[in-house]
Length: 281
Image (cartoon, rainbow, N blue to C red; front, side):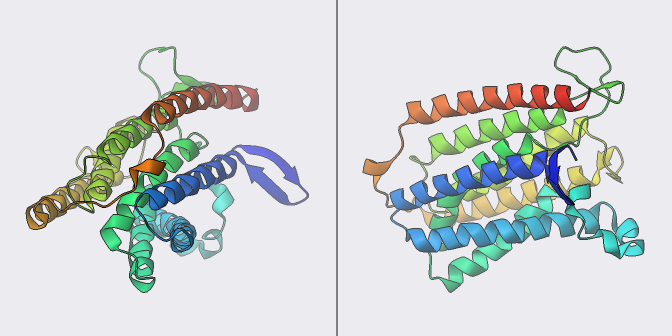
């Protein structure tokens, strides 16, 4: 991981900083959407914080179980060394989602309505946080101008590809939130869309092979996409156009959000190339 600076034995890494920024902005948007959907703000904040914590745990466990189990089985002391990298976004979604469901039931929050309020903030936070990841792509076959030089090789900036796809998914969900036909629709659009994003990005990364030319991450993404589509179809047929109660009077304007997204992506690109230029010297 890129170490920005250290204080004694305590190091601050790039991914930690961008992830923290993404979480804060994501939680603020979750609060705003919860207010629009007439949900209890205090319960929603508790839910968001616990979901993030369990998501981090799930990301680590997912990486250990699906991608590098033999290594951690032989080196258990390495399991808690987050600074050395090794997180699985699929594990984060599964563990965070399961924890969120249990917490929503415990706090008597409407499950699917709350899930829809959460996902815009979640995908926006992921778009912001991903720019700090240092898992680069495979070497480029040609000297494309957007490649990033790492250890003398020109690599695909896989992090930026995912950042761009996540911002696109955020905009799709943001536009869809006012025309959603039933509670839970946005959540499963997020699940399907994010798994599709990961499936695309995996073509530019190196991961353990799972099934023929597909990596383990490819296979996990396909499973999530298939399950998401099936549940979405089931809920659509079962809901019969259930209305979604909201208070549009406190909604953020689309023009403001689109402007912030464009600005955020430009900042992400400049920051990405700038930080890697500085720390590669």
